[in-house]
Image (cartoon, rainbow, N blue to C red):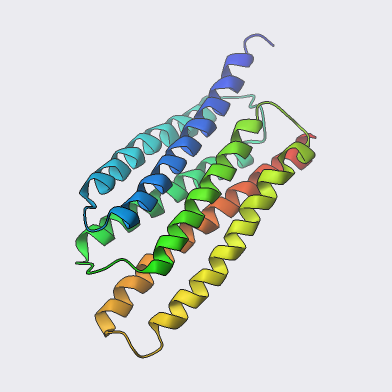
Length: 207
C-alpha cells in the first residue's frame, strides 16, 4: 500500500493543478473584458497558463499509461483530465481570436458570460480539491449544483446574445466574430459541466 500512495497523490495533484490553471485562465479572460482595449497582458498570461496546463495534462496521461493500479477508474481519470484541459484550451483559443480579430468594443453580454465562466471554474476547482478528501457525493453536491446552475445561466445568456447578434442591426463581420467568441466561451462552460459530471460519476462509483 505504501508504494501505491505516492501514485494516488500525484494524480490528485495533477487534477488540482490543471483545475487551478483553468481558474487562472478564466480570471484573466474576465480581466481582459474589463481592461479592453488593453488586452495584451491578459492574452499573454492566458497563453502561459495554457502551456503550463498542457504540461500537466501530458504528465497525467503519461502517468496513466504507466500506472497499473490507479486510485479511480482509468476512464474517469482520462475524461476528467481531458475536460479540464478543454476549459483551458477554449479560453486560450478565445483570447487569441479577440487579439487577432480587430475587436472595436467589448460586448456587455460577453463580459457577463466571462464572469459566469470564472465563477464556474472556481466551483469546479473546489470540487476537484475535494476528490482526494471524500468519497461521499453529498460532500460535493453544493459545488456540483453550482456548476450546473452557472452552465444553465450561461446557456440562457448565450441564446440571448446570439439572438441580439442576429436581429439585423449588426454588420456581418461583427456577427461572424462575436458568434465565434460566444461559441468558444460556451464550449468552455460546457467543459466545466462535463468535468463535474465526471466527478459525480467518480463519487457514485467509489462512495
